[in-house]
Image (tube, rainbow, N blue to C red):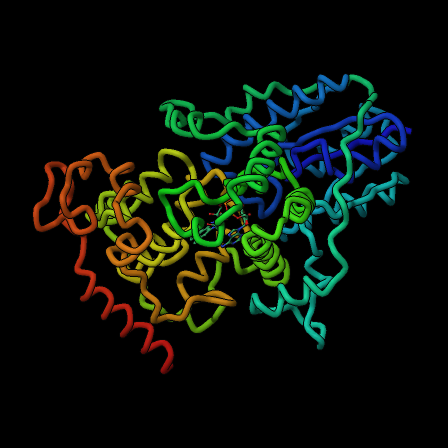
Length: 461
Ligand code: FAD
């Protein structure tokens, strides 16, 4: 028997149910399809393309070590997969499930077509701990609020143990396209220096990060995760996004490492994994979450059209508000931003500048290495107040108060904003503006009032 394994957001060998089952059947051909053309597929952003290139390159070496190639093909999956079956002589196709509507449509159509043609087609649960259709309220509808959702998840049987990676893989040689020709890396201007300094995509690094986290960093996570200057979180998000590590591996490592000293930290960490599950089940049940206000009344919100200078100031960290600028510069340089600062920059864009959350979501989509269809949209809607379980409209993060509280010595601010390195009033530099640092883009108090009034009007509608 020869099985074609189609990898997508599961770029790993260990705990990969589709690969595991295929290896158990006999020979395998493993492929990755760069499909940017099937209907409704959202093209990856720049930082994600950089990550994908490096992740595929690492995975290809790992498969070569096992004696088989990673076959790369581009084009619509509906054409590429049947062609690969024909070329290789496979009699079955296995893949791990994905949950974005456009991708589900591609998969369902292929499954129907190939089954009719007499091929075995199997899909597996690999990337979510709980399938979105498994966890529903008593009346069978999806949860809209996190706490009861996560309680219901925890009341279910514990997630299965991770599977070992197959030790021996055999299969025929099938032609592959050249990864470099996909041009996933920056083309004209090399903006990826900071990404290279910060990250090593690939399964081995993901596993090492997880080990380091559960045996070390997790101690004190409950508090340290709030501090942007401290490496207090796992930094697993891009690895989870591309499936270099599975949530099952993360969950079970966390469980196994739990001691009486770290149990409460680990419970909070596991709850963050729960937020990932929650965002995905929201998107699964309500695909328009990605592009439309989850709460319809927000369709009437009077978003302001920013002029390009204002938008540039936010994107490139030149608003004159240190926490916002530090966060946006960290994002631009490393492709990642601390969660607390993501909330602050989001609130600043959506509430103080009154710019549509989709503008911010798109910028994050392009610049984050962990840009994720569910987590990004759901969190932006959370910040905007338009989401399912959202921040209340009157919660407007004050960037000055936030940095005083979570970065009291201004270390995070100084690290990302060289102009402020020797500033005395690093949280509020405008009374003694250092050379090269811009004055505030707006008045916090006035813009806050404006947003509150707009939200108030919406509630009365
Ligand atoms: P840890 O604290 O170590 O958490 C472990 C894992 O839990 C993360 O890797 C992630 O998979 C998950 N997680 C943690 N927080 C959240 C959350 N709020 N929602 C969903 N999952 C969570 N996360 C993304 O993975 N992709 C995105 O595109 C994304 N966009 C965001 C946009 C905004 C406006 C905001 C406020 C948050 C966004 N997040 C996103 C959530 C969060 O900021 C990141 O998951 C987190 O900072 C990643 O760092 P970590 O892996 O060290 O997190």
